[in-house]
Image (cartoon, rainbow, N blue to C red; front, side):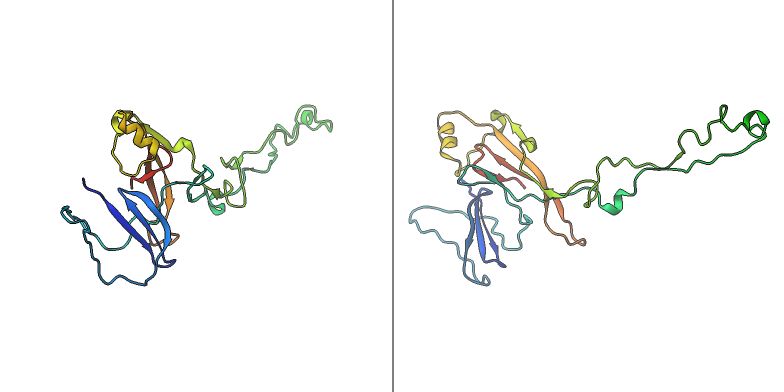
Length: 223
């Protein structure tokens, strides 16, 4: 059985994560050291064979994205980017109309229409033509919406039927393991959403990332 193992180091904060089959099993644990000089992989069990393939050392390409985690109080925690809209400079001004103007003609100059009570002609009646039309329904100091922290919402989940979503991960919860043992394959739910990696305008900053789960406790990074 092939097992994928990832060790990801945060050198700035001296923290590391461990992933097994793209599922995080060690989260934000401290480590000592400032660099890596040698990598050694050993098998401590005599008589057992082990095969190693595709050993990669380099920069993390996951852009510091992490799937949701279940806190001890039963709530789901996930770092979501700010939900932004149009900037104030992009929103533009409010809708406006042109000022009314009364144009005289030889008809309006006739004595019949010169009466002071204005019974025949209502001066400056109606509304001026549109000067600028804005379709923005809501405005704030941030633009067309208030910038707020994104949330983990059920509407971002995609349910995959159990006959299409079965996988034998080693790090499922006890309930999921029991379900697999007795042939009760569980549905898989895919979460997807936007992830902001950097504010540097010279580099790509926004990506759509995905995670999957079968028990809403253990999450797998799907890229």
